[in-house]
Length: 306
Image (cartoon, rainbow, N blue to C red; front, side, top):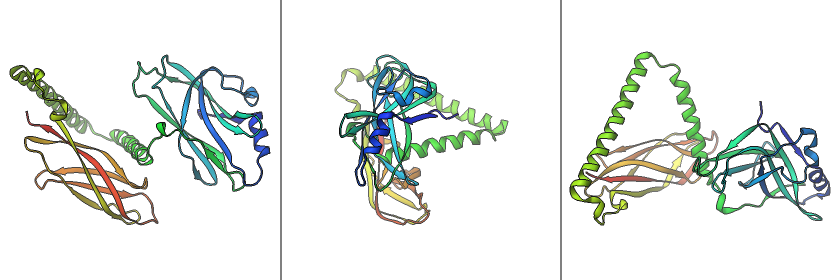
């Protein structure tokens, strides 16, 4: 069942649509979330969201198959009390009436939005499609403070997709595979516990908590970047990044991968400590576009030897 099955233009939205002359732009000014609901047959008469709870951030509009796709990002940063989300409304600028409720979507079943205290950092994104045309194009008024970087969004989406595939693969594991996986997880847990105990012991012995050593001295980071990346359509070449290991530190991990275009993504990377290189495999998701002189950058993290 589709979550936003009941989505309609309001009566004021239809009236605004009829006012659009050739070449005029429909300006979407914002979006809001509500906890109330009405019978689906009454949605067109709505002029405001029912039981409004918060504003939602609009992402840049993109075109797919002749339709304008608008992504909305809901975050709970300012949510004091959790609520059941039932409605999302898009507001537009009417030349005669000012801001109006242009379109409203109502869920077939509520979606719980936790408070910031209950689930810090919670966020969720939906895509809404609107019919676009040359005679009535879309303009979306954006709040830059809430934008999600396209590269970051694509990386997260691909990472989530990969996790989904991994979960599907787990269904084919044999009992022997599962036993080996469980043993590896337990070994990792034991190593983390050992390091925590060792760190606590050394802190007690040396009075670490009473010194001027700051966390930034315990963990450091360095940006690795190359701007000569060239990847053919559908290609997955390997590139190497050199790093300088600070004295007294060891490599902790990698993170924050970003590419110039969302069509490129780092899908595998590992540290070659013997040669002080990071080896990355970068995928071009297009089948017909070659990318040259692209930039790829990420962080490498170091931790002080204990």
